[in-house]
Length: 338
Image (cartoon, rainbow, N blue to C red; front, side, top):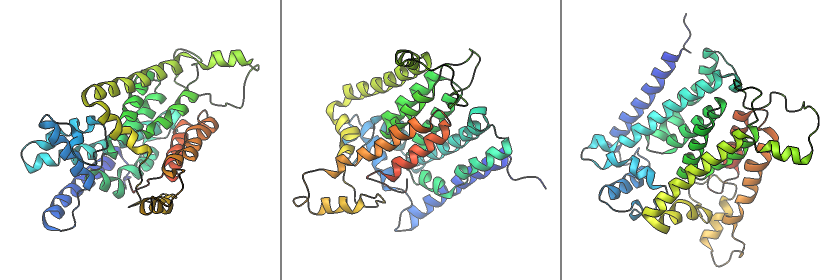
């Protein structure tokens, strides 16, 4: 009997799962008082409609994202119910592309060197996961960011350094948190042993040649891959932000970045800080002058952006990024199903 885990079967099932959920969502929205579509999707599409009218996407209250997202979703403002679902289809397709990139990463020597059948079993945890499919087909934009991050990992493994830098800059512009992967990638990028080398990091970091002096270590740290990655990522991030600032001024900075530093969200929140945030919101005059919503970043970033990269990045970049994501979410002050 032939195995289920062939590329064709797995991807056909992944596409069919999302197609069925998209159709089911249309029916539930039409006939049930409990809507399938995520409330955030209405925020995205309202912002896109404002953009189509020549207005700012921030005219829509609670739109806290880059204007790029509203620009991408402009077709949802066109006439017809089919166009309204454009964003959901795009997010679902992003899921599929992310699954394909996961497969490529797992098959690569630096990502595990698995056979296609083995890699498909692990990729299926994403591709055939009903929760992943549910989130994207309800209209959450997390699928777009997911494919950017997986593409970032693939680009680094393939040593396409400029592409990796552009992807990181774009990802951080979309949402702040992917910046935590920057330290891991920079720490992992070693000078190739030969121009043809595809190794991302030293296979055995515990073994070294003659000890380096402090000055030699500093000079060797600033190698070509690291500098290229840093400049391309920072350049992309800065260019996108300057463009948006030129168009939307301080409103862009406030809603896309600064708002999240002081955000208090005690609803649908699985964060360890949930009870404290709830009390801070309910009794703002009785809480300490020390703002928890601002201090919560300290342990979160110390673990996910410093300790984990320094400990693991040169051994296993993909595993390091997984550990960073897990730690970042576990210690985040706002933690939802997405």
